[in-house]
Length: 287
Image 1 (tube, one colour):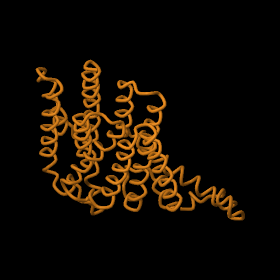
Image 2: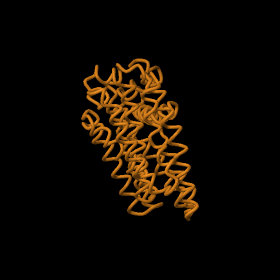
Image 3: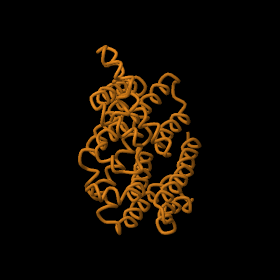
Image 4: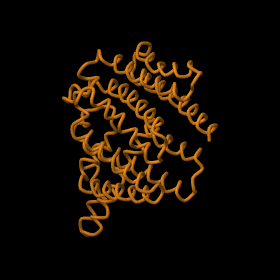
């Protein structure tokens, strides 16, 4: 960890107050670095989901701003918590940012303080922008995220269901109708299946029994189940346009035609972006 302590912290040791500030600064860097790293890897699309729903709803500018900031802060807290909790195991994961892993390991107390501040701030902003329902959604997704990291990520099948719940509770911050929450949850579940398929070898080596690691042969079945539910929910939006709803099975194809699950994940996210825009257009037309 010497590379993280470095001469800056070494000089600060002579001044306890400065040393504390430097360590807190590293804590902020680690947590927000997790967000930047996820965005760099094209994760974090749920933030766009929340922002886009607010955009078509035309809420009060102050309330919308508070909900966007709440969505951003809570997403930062979620990713920061996950990376901090998984830091020890991630030292053996070549897909993880080595500097971030070491930062989370070296500054655990400071990271915990930053996460507490972000969680509290997101709760307050959600209450200001959306009242009690939005604040409850923030509390719910924080709890769902913690339970996932603590144990449920290593429970086959439940890890997929729980990630779907993760996505739905996050989207609930901006209070879309229940059918849209189901769509967001199912899209999140499908993406999770592809992501765990990408990490299958590393997870198996670290003893993390995700659905993909425990039963690789079950991956297409999980994708098919999620796509079937997504098609049924989508049918309720598009009515006679059955072909649009049937397109919900497209995320199943990359599993069979792409040798790299990461490629399948990217193609699936591209399709979900189109589907989400089509859903927003339907709601905007109704409104």
